[in-house]
Structure formats: C-alpha cells, structure tokens
Amino acid sequence: MKLDATDLRYVTSEEFRVLTAVEMGSKNHEVVPTQLIVQISGIRNGGVNKLVGSLAKRNLVARVQNSHYDGYRLTYGGYDYLAMRALSKRDSLHSVGNQIGVGKESDIYIVADPEGNEMVLKLHRLGRVSFRAIKQKRDYMGKRKSASWMYMSRLAAQKEWAFMKILYEHDFPVPRPIDQARHCILMGFIDAYPLRQIDEVPSPGKLYSQLMDLIVRFARAGLIHGDFNEFNILIRRDTGDPVVIDFPQMVSTSHENAEWYFNRDVGCIKTFFRRRFKYESSIYPRFKSAHGEGSEDFRLDVVVAASGFSRREQKALEEVRTISL
Ligand code: ADP
Ligand code: MG
Image (cartoon, rainbow, N blue to C red; front, side):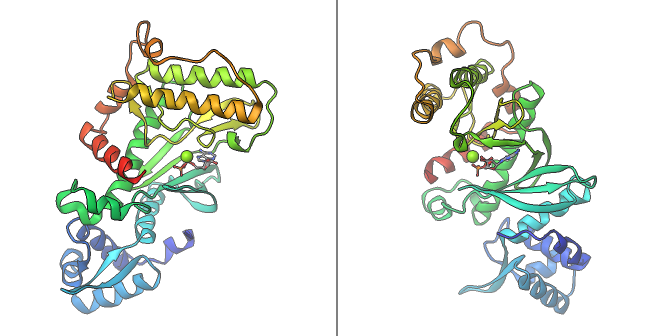
C-alpha cells in the first residue's frame, strides 16, 4: 500500500471531521450510514456528501451499498492517515520514505522526524489475512465486531508497544520505542541485516550463545518471545550483535503452553544454525531451569499486564492469532 505523506496537508479540517466521524461510526456499524456521519460530524447534509465523496476519491473511505442502506466504511488508507496525522500533530513524525517490509501482518516504512532523524514506522494489519475466519468463528467484540480489523490491529500495536517499552527500559536489545497511535508504532531504526539474509558470521558459536542467552533472559523476566526466528532477529551492521523485534505474540512464562512456546523458540535457533551455518551444539536452554529458581526478582509479564495491556485484551488477541494461523 502506498503511503503519501504529502496527502496529510491536503485534507481540510472539514474533511478531517468527516473522516473522524466515519471512524467513530464504525465502532458500531460495519457500514456507517451517511445520516450518522452527518450527525457525528455536525456538518450539514449536502456538505457531508461532497466531503465524503472527496475522501472516497483518495481511498480514505469507501462507499458501500448494502441491502438496507448506503454508507461508508473507513479503509486501511483512512486509518493509516488518521494514525499518521496524530503522530505528526505531536511532532513525532514528519515525513514518510520507502517501504522496507511487507509482513503477513504489518507494513514497515522508513520515516523521519522534523530533524530528519530516521525511524521505522510499523503499521499493524491484523485481520488482512483472516478477517473472514475471525468473523465466522467468534464473537469477541460484541457490537465492535464490525470494526474487528481496526480493533485487532490497534490491539496488536498496543501490545507490541507495551512490550517494546518495558524491554527497552530493562536493557533488552530491542529498538527504541518512540511513539504509538492507533495501529502504528514508531521506533528507532536499526542499521542491521535480518539474520535470514546472513550467510556467514565470524563466530556462529558466539552468536548462538548470545541468542540462547537472550531466550533465557526473557524467561527469567517471565517472558517468551513466541516468534524468535531468523526473521525477527536483526544483526547490527557495526557490532554484529543481535537485536530482537516483533512482539505482538509474546507470552508469559505462566501461560498454559509456555513450555511449548519456549521449546519452539529454542528449536528455531537450533534448526537455523544447523542448516545455515552447519553449527550444532548439545548445549541449549531448558524451560524448567530457565524460568525456575534463581530467576530475576522482577516479572516483566506482570509489569506489562499492569501497564495497560489487560489480560482480557491479551486473550482476545491471542485467540484471533490462533485462528489466523
Ligand atoms: P512483521 O510482524 O510483519 O513480521 P517485523 O516487526 O518483524 O514485522 O518487521 C518486518 C521487517 O522489517 C523486519 O524483518 C526488518 O527487516 C524490518 N524492520 C522492522 N523493524 C525494524 C527496525 N526497527 N529497524 C530496521 N528494520 C526493521
Ligand atoms: Mg516479523
């Protein structure tokens, strides 16, 4: 998807009111009736029609005609716009550059702040793949169901933000968290190659133990990354040290399947090192010793839960992710 930052300047304040009204309306309506947009925005009828039409032309909203009534829904583009506008209003974000990643569940862009410092913008796209599956199988959101892709993407971003902040504060090698809005996260740019692109390292044994030590450090703090593989480990270009990214799937060591997640993370590293570097070691961490006696006296999983990402939200996200696999 193309993000055009210059577009930020071409949305008038009235158009913005209408766009916000569509967003608010979609909390309870899959298709927001034009009348409701009129009501929420407080702009008169004829005005709204024209404004919403010009937003539709730029793909910020989409017109939907269903059997009961005509209306509009917010598009990814519209939601991206609202998030980026919020970030730029508080001077966190100034310009948007190249896209550097398209994941299954996110888009990644290089962006800059007003001083020209490079950062990374991650836009979560939960529900892009599995919206239908979510809709069919569960009813988590009650009335919010209609807004599930927006809601789930925002939840994923909030979870990733909460973890990134706490990990960063505790000196884990993760990107610096800068700001968060709706389904977006702003973080420090890491000058690095993803491990999957690396064919040779000076010492596979050293990197292997650095990574296994990290898994243990996570577990001592009550956490399991849950997706600890060559895609989510970046190797710094200058020092060769690993940086871990991508946290929406992190689980607590108290999770009922914690040991299974832990072993899968360990297994990913073992398999990758064997295949890529022909490196094998009989030394690798076990769940029981990693999170048992002698653990850290702080529990990051508990801190995160207390910091605003509630158990209920965790659960909703977890269940959706399980369905979407
Ligand atoms: P996804 O959830 O789609 O897997 P990731 O957070 O893993 O998203 O990021 C996808 C890719 O974007 C990474 O493999 C990496 O190449 C790049 N990337 C993500 N965050 C950063 C960052 N802070 N600095 C540099 N590159 C990054
Ligand atoms: Mg990833």
